[in-house]
Amino acid sequence: MKLFLKILLVLFVIGVFFRWMGHQELNNLIEEGVLDSDYTQLELAMLCEKLDFEVIFWGCLTGGVW
Image (cartoon, rainbow, N blue to C red):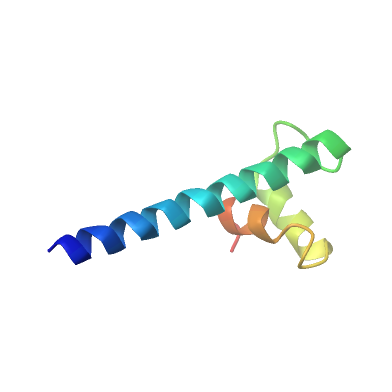
């Protein structure tokens, strides 16, 4: 049971880290003027289709596009 809880804790921490990475990436795009601060999921999806995979990967993943 303790092993199961430890595994859940590790997975939770990993999930929080990836969400944070995506949030940082989206904030950078807003600061650069690529994305409006009140973006919609459709705008994010169009941006994810246009840009290079490495440029906005975490933002697309955590933004609900993929």
